[in-house]
Amino acid sequence: MGGAMPEPAPGEIEWPANPALDEVREWIRRSAPGRMLAGAPVVYRCAPWGLTARFAASGNAIFFKATADYFAAEIPATRLMNRHFPSASPRLIATREEPGRRWMLMEDYQGRLLSEAKTPEPYLAAVRTLAQVHAYFASALDEVPPTIPRLPATQVPGLLDELIPYVERWYASEWRASERLRHDLLDLVKANAHRLPAWAREVSALPNSLDHGDLHSGNVAVRRDGSVVLFDWSDVTVGCPFFSMDFLLSSITQTLGAMEGARLSAEYLDALAGWADRDELDRLYMLALCLGPVRSAYTYKIIEEGSDCRGRFHATVGWWLQRAVTRWGQLG
Image (cartoon, rainbow, N blue to C red):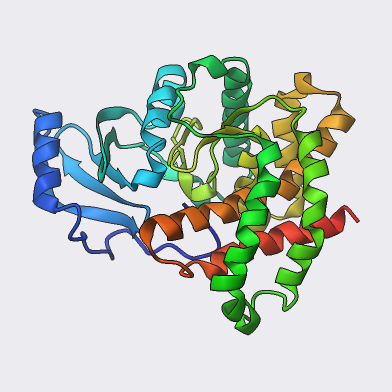
C-alpha cells in the first residue's frame, strides 16, 4: 500500500509481536535450507495490512513479507507473475498460506526503487513492462486463479455508494478540520456520484487484465541493466488495467513534472494501441483515471474494517477522493 503519507526509513521500525521473530526465523530455516541468516532483520514496513523485512543471508539477501488475510491474493498473484514474467517479479523461495499466516519469502530484488529515479527512463521502462503484463493477461484470463478478486469497472460506482456513508460516519469531522482537503470535498463527491455509472460502462469496453492496484514508485525496483521488478501485488484484482497507471502517473508528475507525466501515459497507450483507435483509447484512459481513485480509496475501507481501525486513514482516503473530484471537474 501507499498513498499520500510518507514512509518511515528502513531500519527505524521494530519487529512486531505478531508474527514472532523466532517463528519466522524457524520457518525460513525450514523453507530455505542452506541459507544461513546473519544479524537482525531490517523492517521496511509494519502496517495493519502486513510486514516487510529484509534478512541478510548467505548467497543473497532475502525478503520476508507477511500479508493480512484480506490481501491473500498477493501470494497467488506473485506466483502467477513468477510463471509468466519471472524477470519482472520478485522470485519466490517459499510461501505459507494459512489464515493469519500468509507469508512469502523472496530473493532480494537487486535494484533501486523507482522513487529514487531522477530521469524519466526508468519510469518509461516500468510502464512498458506493465503494458506487456496487461496485454498478456487480457488474452489469458483463464490462467488467473479465482483467488484473485474480480473487480470490473462497472462495479466501481457501487464502491463509491458504499464509501460515502462510511466517510460520513468515520471521516467527516477530520475532513472538515483538514487544511489539505477542500472544505466541500464530501459534497462534491456526493453531487457527482451519479456520473460514474455511465463512465464505467464506457470503460468496460476495454479488456480486463491484472490491475496491480498500488503501483507507486516505491513498489517498482530498477536494476542496473534498466529492467524493472513490479512487486507488492497485495491490492491486485482482475479489472480495468488502466487503473494501474494512476499512482505511477502521480509519482512521475510530482517528481519530474506534468510533461513527463503526459509522456508516460503516451508510452503506455502506444504499447496497447491494438485495443482501440487512439482517440477512443485516450478517452477511455481519461475516464479510467476518473474511476481509479475511487477503487484506491475503497481499499482503505477494506483495511480499516479488516484491521479494526476505522477512521485511521481518513487523510489518505481524502487524498484519493480529492484526486477523483479534480479529474471529474476536468471533464466538465
